[in-house]
Image (cartoon, rainbow, N blue to C red; front, side):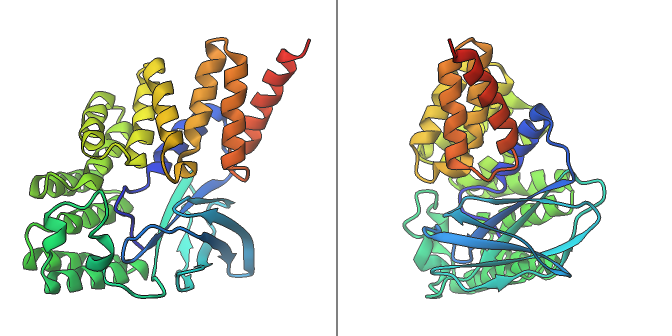
Length: 329
């Protein structure tokens, strides 16, 4: 289990923001992110199966880096199987949904079928810094061992390998960032922030760590700092959908509605924008408040088109039905 170059768990922020507004409270919402170990993007459709000890509970198909979503029972144990073209089928170990959790996120790292090395596959990424392109082989090997341990749920071993990668290459910003991800999984937000900060201090061009810091700031309702971090990211890479989409949250939260609506359009124009379809819900809610029902309807319809199986779908359909009824003569 690991996460992409672009960001860690941006969807979790959307869901927290929207679930609170739309009253979705049944059981626990499980978000599943699938990433390739060499960190290339996933271009094909991926099948994600949710399994309990009794067998298959549900199956969903998602496109590219889009997250899969399930409704699960609190206090129960589950595991996941991921398969698809271009990747090796992978089944996780069992994990438990805490009885008090409203949301739970699992990020699954799968192996590409051609097994390219991380350095070969990432050198052309727009979010790769110069230091990422000069990683010593031994440090890269330790990173790969860490990612493999992470994919198997062995956080202790993964952390140890990332530490070894740093010992071999002190400028390994990604290693600090992955240690921050592990800290997040351990609910140690203070340590996670320190590690994400260390990542950007080590390499100020490593954009994913900025997005991770911005996500923490959004969760802490520190929207001004989040906007500042995201502005840096977008200035360096205006096509980084994670950053643009997350920026819309800060703008909506700050009631900067005109800016937010523009950034919803920017997000929608970017590649793989479907994974951030929740921005259309926020846009629809704002346009409805502003008494622009036709535009609100269009935004809600876009969300349902891009994520028809989302747990938020029923609430959006109800809002859409209410708006449509109001438009009839």
